[in-house]
Length: 301
Image (tube, rainbow, N blue to C red; front, top):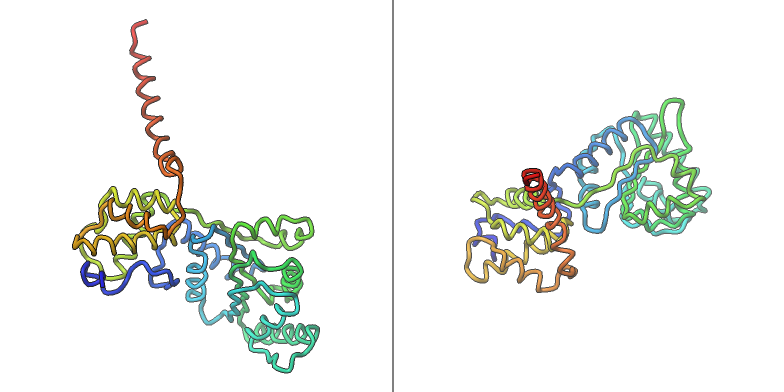
């Protein structure tokens, strides 16, 4: 149980999106700010995209926790549904009875009525869909039609789409242009750079109760970032396995060798050597070019 060995109260690098471990890194905090501003301003469609493992579900959970009582939230984690299935799922999330299996047309009328009731109570209804890249085009069109409902001053339904970059490809289709034009706020989650990787790991260790000096050596930080390519999910996997390796040797700090052992375990995808090294060669080339330039300027003419 390595958490006791390192003075931790719990495991810091679990893969479950526990919002206690949310790290307000620039890209993720900007995304959260975009979401809160857009929802409070009454915008109809908001889109957040990011590569696999960049923290979309964590951000989604954080958003749900941040919304106050003025919002009513319907959450669909897996929207790979046909049009009629999506109507049923939306109705169920809104608390509309679907047990008798009424036709989708009647369900849509019930949804419309429910949206009016929510608006009359002074609240806003937000529909949040995770893994939105899996939504069939005809189901996306249904979502666009639902956002047509509005009062003179605001939309009756706001929709937040969380998805992988394939969602952008789906929305780029010509038949999606009407929906695409309605997305007034969007943000893309970025991978972490080396400094952000260090902040991310330190933040999670702190939440888990670690109060000592750097648990990872500088070379260990470098290797974790290089192997993970700055993807939070892969950072968690490598850091967890590196801690296990250090614990197995009775060490109090994680060294580069422990990270290499974690990577060799094959839990994350393998990268070719040049994929790891080349980003770090760029500053070396720049320094070399600067040195050559200075030498040339000082060379006797």
